[in-house]
Image (cartoon, rainbow, N blue to C red):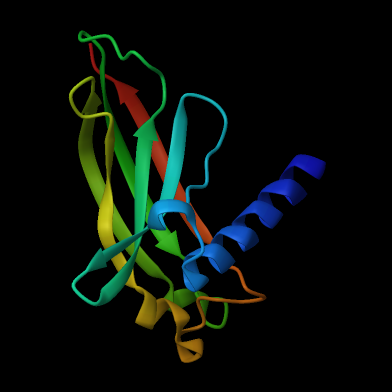
Length: 138
């Protein structure tokens, strides 16, 4: 339970850093221990700031012969109206030594994310769900 509480605190700090621009190099990542990580970053294009979400294979080096197909859904939960949560469905993404990461650089604008009427921020935090299934290729 303590580990889960620490993760919630980490995510709250992440949102604060991202919204105030105090993160190092404009990027903040939430990492889960193990062979994979979910990166939550900021991305600027012109004057528009975006929330970016990535899924990465952390194991290094990745053998040239290894590959896996990943099916995933990424969702930012609307705390006010769950049915209005923002989702993206991505399927059949092949991860390998040449392609160890994939994500969406422009997942959502910070204007949309920070608009209180949209219900994405509650108690200075956002809830990002990533559901994935990994199928190692033969």
